[in-house]
Length: 140
Image: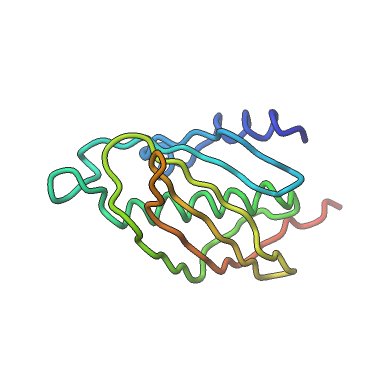
């Protein structure tokens, strides 16, 4: 599937948890297996007046890592997270955030992925995660 077709498929079929965060697929680099998503949030996602709540940052990182796994290997049907480690580097704020994710390794039943979340030139958070790989059953 072409990069453009992958982006169109993602943008047409967001899960509600990604859609509420304003998810939009910006780029898929099949050679580097790197996916870039944007998220647009307002004050409803903040605490302390205008600081993005960490759980929403984590959701952005988690979603991008899961989607990159699906894009990198079309035999994957589901990719639930088993463990996520997030490092919060700087506060995020209402507006647009950009998340870039890539697989570190995708095995037969376990995948390791990583991502960074940026707002403008500021690195907001990084994540590494372990995912369970559930593959499509071959059709008979």
